[in-house]
Length: 385
Image 1 (cartoon, rainbow, N blue to C red):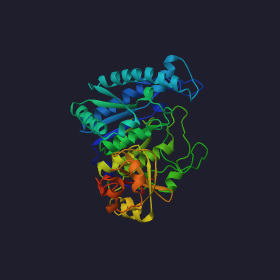
Image 2 (cartoon, helix red, strand yellow):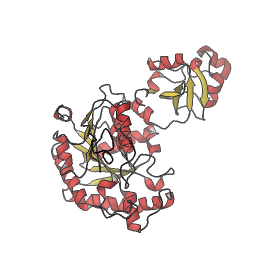
Image 3 (cartoon, rainbow, N blue to C red):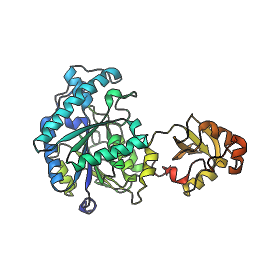
Image 4 (cartoon, one colour):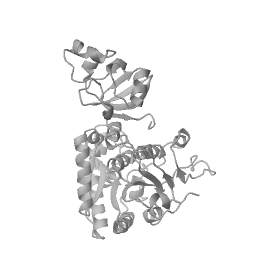
């Protein structure tokens, strides 16, 4: 059996994601989402984080639970798609959630800071760099950042964006160059089949590479209180793998779970990271929201995968409306294989698609760039999907 200590010995920066089902008591109503906070559990997390910090670790917390707590406080149980009510519940619940976190950590002399994020936040590189700087500064001052999705302002369906913060926690871990993401939930880890319906289901202790077979084990969400099922957790592990960050999925009910995990005990499922770590800029491009799609031929795809720039000659079709500097998807034969920052607008590309570089000026009347997308502005995601 592989000794986990050899992987976790050098872990210094840790992101801890805590699911809704872990942070709330078992006194929910019939909807399984109208729940009160469990302060004992939160104090246990604070105690363990305090000990990790004493050992020189940097810790960031991603906390779910605002909507469930808000619904409990308001005494309502709306249908899942009643978005305005859930947004209001998130606004109410978030302040209560932070109050409990503040009280839990204050018992160990630790201050906390609230950071609310949306997916659009990550599509702007300046904002993303500001996030890194803010978190770094908070950690330098001994503050524990507590991050949540900004549910009360989301225009999309709440919790459908990140999957109960699984994807959010992975993106945060990726962008701050964390060494380990620990996802705490109401499940023991990844099984080869649904343990709730198969008594012979086997817990997978170590995942060296996320293969299609591993992904097939994802199944459907397991908890009624949160929407982050195993499928979203595997997706989170893929994001972290690309960034060279390990992921551990474990049951939050395990006593002293964080300390046991870091000591190398065989609990939960540990996902190893790819040895080849993509550059931070490439990771940002891959995770940023795309504004359109550029379809290319097989030759252009081969060139891009060979670390070359994209030329107009290889473009066969343009979809969407986008400007220079926007992130676009690169697609070939129906498969998206990369993303990149375009140096031309969609309108310009419609005119120069299929043309040779020396023909651009004759078509547009100017030629600012020889490449449609420079090689340094391309993120390959064929291995990621």
